[in-house]
Each structure stands twice: as C-alpha cells, then as structure tokens.
Image (tube, rainbow, N blue to C red; front, top):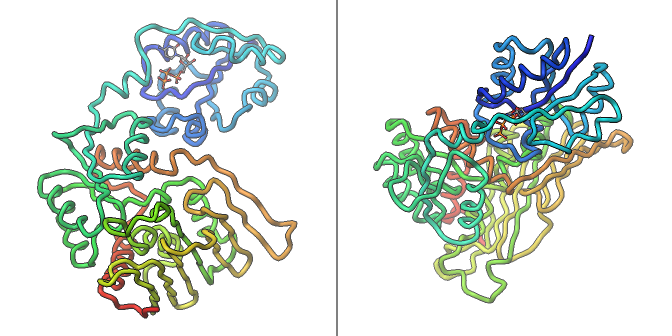
Length: 417
Ligand code: CTP
C-alpha cells in the first residue's frame, strides 16, 4: 500500500484545495491530510484564518478524500510524521517547490501544480472589510495602523467607517466614545474607557442597547505569553495565589525635557495594564485598597508616580506605575506552591518562568509575540464586530474595576506624597 501525505491550512475550503487532494490521493492508496493547528499558523504569521481548526478539519472530512487526518502543530513535524506513519510520498502544491526537498531523505517528494486563480487569501479578502477610523496621535496610533496591515478583513479609512479606534487622552474618551456609539459605530478605546464608573456604565449600556461592540484596549491582554500564564495560574500550577505584584514605568515621554501637558498621566498610561493581571487572577472583589500618589502639577491631574495596594479575602496585590520615576517592570505572581516571574518589560513579554522551592522543577515558557499583542487585539475586535459577540479578552467587570480605581485617583481619593 502506498501512503501519501499532504499538509495545509485549508481555510474556507475551495476548488484549488479539492483538486490538490484528488491528485494527492491518486498518487497512492491511502491519503493522510495534515491540517495546521491555529497556534502553529500563528507562529507562521497566518493569524486570521476565518475558520477554526475543527471547522477546517470537518470540511476536509466532508470531501471524503482523506483516509486519515492529523494536526500539524510544530515546525519540523513533517519529518516525524513521515517516519512515524511510514509515508511513501509527500506532496504539496507548486507554490512550495523546493521548500520540502529535505524530505527526500525519508520519502518521495512530489510538487503538484497549483490551481490558478483561487486561494484562501483571495476568498478572505473578498468578504467585506471592516472599515476602521482612527482617533488620536502618537506612537500607539502609529503602531495600531501598522498592525492593521497584518490583519486581512480590516482597513483604515478616513470617513464612512463601521468602527473606530480611540486613542486620544483619557479625559476625552467618554464624550468621544459616546458620540461614536450614538452614531452607530463599534468602538475599541485605549483603556481607561472613562474616568468615572458612572460614565463607563452608561457607555456599556449604550453599546448593549445599540448592539454595538465596545472593547477596552489593553494590548497585553492579547499577548500569547500573558494568556498562557493566566491559564497556568487558573489550572493550579503555582497553588493558591496569595499575591500579584506588577510594576510598569516609562520615562520616554519626558526625555526631551518637554512638559506634561497633553500627555497621559501615570495612572491612565500604565494603571490599566498593571491592574489587568490582578483583576484577571484575583477577581475584582477586593476588600480594600490604598492609593498613594505623587502629583507633579499644581492642578494635581498628573501623577508622576502611583502605588496601589489591594487587599482581598485571602490574597494581596500591588501595582507601581510611574512616568517620572523608574523601576524594574516585572510581574510576580506568588502562589502557595511556587511563583511565576515575568521579566521586564512584562507587558510585552514572550517569556516567563514558573519557579519552585526545588529549582529542578522550574520551567521556562516561550511564546511568539507578534505586534506586542495589538495584532490579535485587532483580530478580536473585527471578529467581535463580524459575529456580534464581544470575544475580547477583557470583560466588563475588569474594565469597570479599572475605571473605579482611575476615578479615585482623578478625584484625589489618595494619600499624597
Ligand atoms: N493549493 C492548490 N491550489 C490553490 C490553492 C492551494 O493546489 N489554488 C494547495 C497548496 O499548494 C497546498 C494546499 O492546497 O498544498 C493547502 O494550501 P493552503 O495554504 O491551505 O491554501 P491557500 O489557498 O494557498 O491559502 P492561503 O491563501 O491562506 O495561503
């Protein structure tokens, strides 16, 4: 029996795929189809497949052409598969000519002519694009616009948009977001969405009533390493969490000696990111908190440095954020069995460690970080708009809790130093 194997993503299964599978099957007696996992595709830069792995597998199954379907999960797996499954022929389309010649050592390699005029990319591109307007200036906006270029299905436009990205200073968020929701636009707003809980809740209600997506923008929530870290904590890898401590500082805004006018203060620029792991791990039901801030302007609007301590039933947490002070930007999650250490700058990390008393048990985790998480944030935003269901990584309770803290600082419910 001649065993043939072929691989692909097979997103939005099309005529080109089917023709390839038919010819692959005709090369032998038994056809194995390797379908790429979502994670593996991510590492290859294919970040916005329309269909999930299971949907793509079901579509292959429905063709009746595959005798066996496997999932391709890592680089180099093809060699393992060919050896493990006793494959005689490896085949793919001619777009890959030469790329898999290294498999000749293990089996015969055949490149089949690619069907002209059809591809998943074209099919995805033909479906209507989500038009996004951008409001704000500076580095964060430049990055957002650049990252949109990696996500097919979205385009940046000047007017006539379906959705907006708001990255103006936080004191303008509430009125801008309200204006756009009222105009029927979906909104992704850099956190904090508002400066008071009342305002935030009003916006949330407005979005719900109008069936619009309102997403809180914190790129770290979309970094793969951060997401995996949360899952490890939830699955008990470090036991019960007793403390979450995060530090975020940056002084770059002031390096040119310019004033603070028009700039984000420390609690708004860094507070949402620093509080994110606390509220996502320990919840938003803390018993008490103490905020200590140092303001650098006469009006006390600009906190150059803020430290917050939260007390929960069985845990504590702290954040330290600053724009006029510098510290080590690390995240440490302390548990009853071990701890997680994320080195600076933890908010854009591709790496963390789980550490134990017995160092032999320590484990290091590495994940690819594309576009600091912004790319996946845009994917989540556009998919939420498409499906009408908010699939963002930050729920409204967390956003609410973030705004609550910002409100206290804005109203000077702090100890001043
Ligand atoms: N293929 C083909 N003819 C096409 C499209 C794909 O023969 N018109 C083949 C590819 O060469 C590969 C397999 O089908 O062997 C799976 O390809 P995949 O990358 O999933 O499909 P594409 O349509 O090329 O996807 P994309 O546009 O996302 O790259």
